[in-house]
Image 1: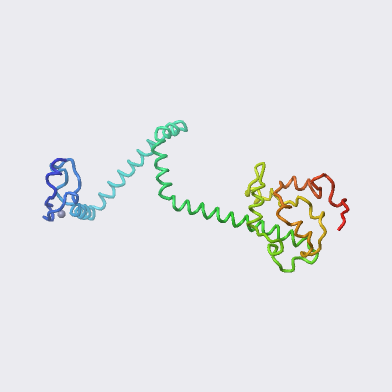
Image 2: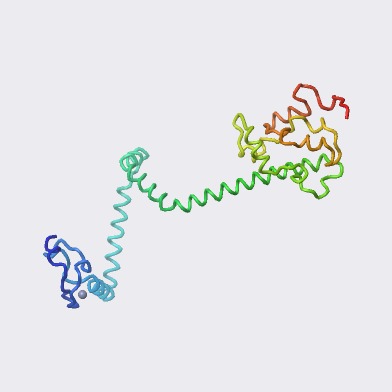
Length: 240
Ligand SMILES: [Zn+2]
């Protein structure tokens, strides 16, 4: 090793060029710590020799490769307990490797997660839009007449999303909403209101944010047209 430091440059015995020691192969057998021939010459000689004795080298490779494979197989932990023991013994190294792999791919993974989240947000907004759009159309005698519901109601899917989210309770989430387990419910049922077109004042009251809440599907089915005080909307006679 010391020799290596003393002679920073060395002459190759093959090509006679003086080169830096880093261009020689390290060898403990040689006094200078590196081989007498430079890497390039060593490589060329190796190639030449291989081309001359192709059969011999092929057989030799085969022998050593099979021997190496056999060693791998023999060293492989055989039972589950052995595998577990091996894992425990090498845990830190494995986790470190995984962490390194994650860090290397972090950008890609984070971008993928961001894209997934964005897609989900878009999907939630679209579902809200569809449900309100369909609901509004269903209860208007002449339909929406090609008007968008948000222009009729004065809020949009984002506003409604925020409003509903602020009322989430008992494990409610947008995942459950997307699964169809959460309905957008009218606190005072639609049948409580009197309107047949979107200019009716009660139309806006019926569909106002204050009258909408997230409700579990089963609760909504149970609720039907009951008012908060327990009476049924269809049995309430109101003066218009
Ligand atoms: Zn050389």
